[in-house]
Image (cartoon, rainbow, N blue to C red; front, side, top):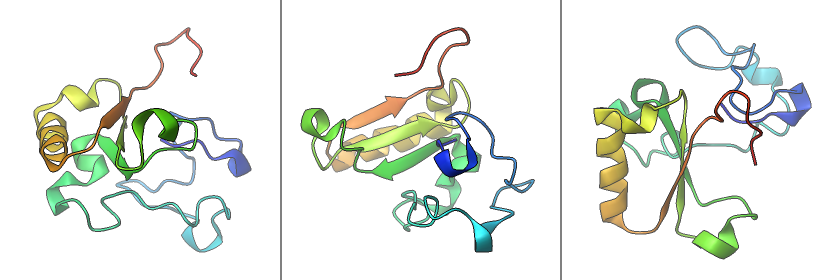
Length: 118
């Protein structure tokens, strides 16, 4: 549930082009801003059963430039696909495994309704 400015899609909003069951319905014509993005699962860094739609979290190697000074290059960002997903047994197991590999883990949850996201 990443922000896609080219589609005026705010973070934590389901993309209208997302296919039922996962995948992009406009993959061949997707915006340029979507083309380089690959989560850790797509990069082959996670197991098949750690796919974001199954576990409820998206894992990214590294962080945005805004967070790198605080967290460093080896940090991972874990974004919840739905509120509370990082607390499920599957996601908690994945986060625990990533922590054992080293580096900091930054968990990003959807904003609480009525609040403004940073």
